[in-house]
Length: 235
Image (cartoon, rainbow, N blue to C red; front, side, top):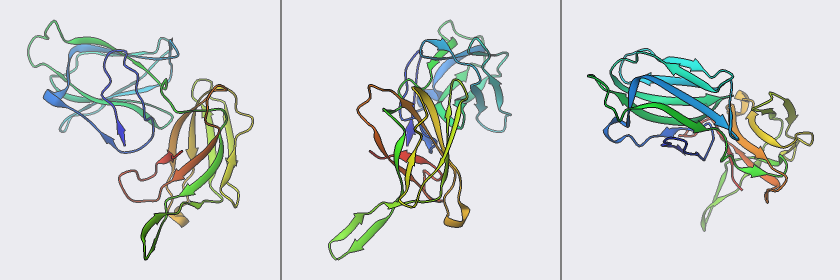
């Protein structure tokens, strides 16, 4: 479950395409009607990030994409309550609430917010391991997790900064490997398999030669439940 309530320059974690819960006391922080969102990664502006302002009720969503400076300016926001969503390549990394005052904006209202994208993505020395599905065996002693290997699932690995893309398919033992991928932050995407009730899923992950993790166990989940379609790192 993704839970994020990031504030100015705060890092975030648990970066996965899953259901989102939010902590929204008093409709979140106060924002000025002209409001700028800045996205950075590794200290540098990040281009191509989708930023959405989602109003409560029947209002239309307002969206923008970060340019070379890593920022999006939203002008003349109407008074009301909103949710801020930040996503790239299918991964939502920020989802939090804010409000714009009906009357003159207070001096304490935020005019700029900065977020660090992907800095807390789980690390591994290489992206290789086993793709499994959630399965539970029931016997006289109770229920026992028994993850089953999933063969024949097509996966892509995309470098979130350069766009470099790699592909592979899980073998009969559920094994996968992206041996050519170099250091960086990636979005790992599993394709849907409707015949076996697997939906598409995404996971943000970082290749770091200094990481302690190397062999991955990745769980692909079926078409129901709160995390429908998610791809989860379980080790």
